[in-house]
Image (tube, rainbow, N blue to C red; front, side, top):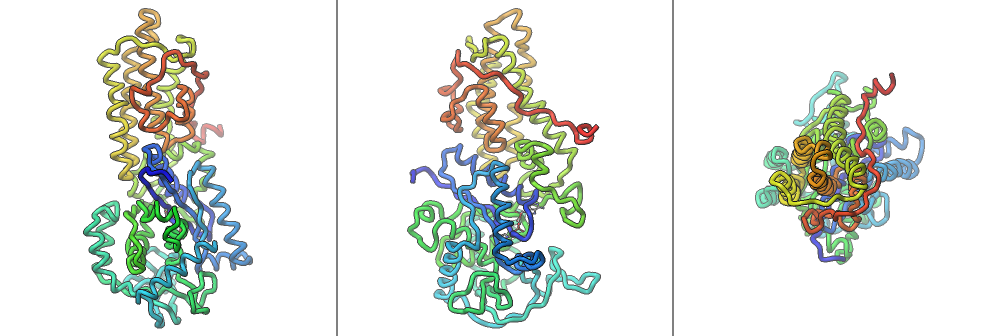
Length: 520
Ligand code: ME8
């Protein structure tokens, strides 16, 4: 393995009780963007996703379909696995919790927790929400119209009483608070961090970590009638995929502790409280960060099957195009905030930034080069102040500004910055008016087109993590070799070479017609 800096990023592993939708696509696209960004910035990246296949919720979903849980999970897991290439997701591995390598890791972790005195047998009586696969305290619950106890998430709870192994979570409160204090970036965004800190400060109860009423789970070592609580099983995926319990495994050595677990805000508590507590108790280093992003609603409503407004990832691709969808979800809503998906906003954003912004810039420049410069990178004379101002933005500011934002998951702000350069380049072409220079000063026209083509090269490199396919097309059109597409190549040393033959230009970001117009 190389000695480049390492970067390990994970998505949640998704439940297989249902098909993938916009929410799953969103987290995975964001992680993919970060993984690509880091690779372009010369990191060795490991990017993990997968499926969470045990637990009561999955068992019930299989029973409802009348098939055995393994057949059921094989099928649904495959729909996730098939989806990711369609969204151009570059995960390095796909972990399933029903794999032997994973079960082995869970049992090894369990044994460590037993050996360190953190697990004891008792009996459990409490409220459990199957939908959330979570236990709740009486004080957290409300009662709905049907008289059922309801968790803060809206999920109905049932009273569960059984023999159970417990994890001594109550002993880890101070250590967790210490962890958050020493690592102020451990939980991001900051508002979420405060939420977790007050939850921990309010006092932690020991956690029931095994079930006897369920068979669909990882067996607890030496306790044949117990299976592990689905969350201790699920969280372990982050290390089982790296080869744990073999701590000398090359992937484990290189990539653990993870740089970041990216999750939705719904499952922050599991990642920022339970998981680091399990790890500390087992003597395993804790991940560096948890980033909890916000929640999408659809045209102001919660996404739900009963409302019939669930957006399937394929709908996104069919309606807007893949890169357009990736761009929209990352640009429209600051990562961390909740967002509302609106069809009109999607079209407006895609048309203004991609079709009229970047697409138009490339189209105008490249078609002029095709017609007036023999389809080759033009020569350039001495650069004027305006030329240098634009090129300096590319060479000196584009990547540092973007890196500053992307490294904090501030994709929206990072893209806003990149589009300032797109707009500056469009303003430059309007002011320089190469179509007029064509008649008055061909040498100057060539210089202007050179500066624009070079700007397109730099922009194409910069946007690859967000719109990979379109950026590749853009870079092909200015004939950038495949091995010259890293951020480090945005420098005058790698500038376009006069005389290089360019392929015939083709539009990269078409204007999208509103769906009603398409039908009409
Ligand atoms: O919780 N908006 O799996 P899950 C944004 N198996 N993101 C959304 C979303 C929405 N409306 N809906 C879902 C689980 N998500 C566990 C995880 S990890 C060790 C185990 C995304 O299938 C978001 O990332 O319910 C959320 O955290 C995740 O899907 C929940 O997926």
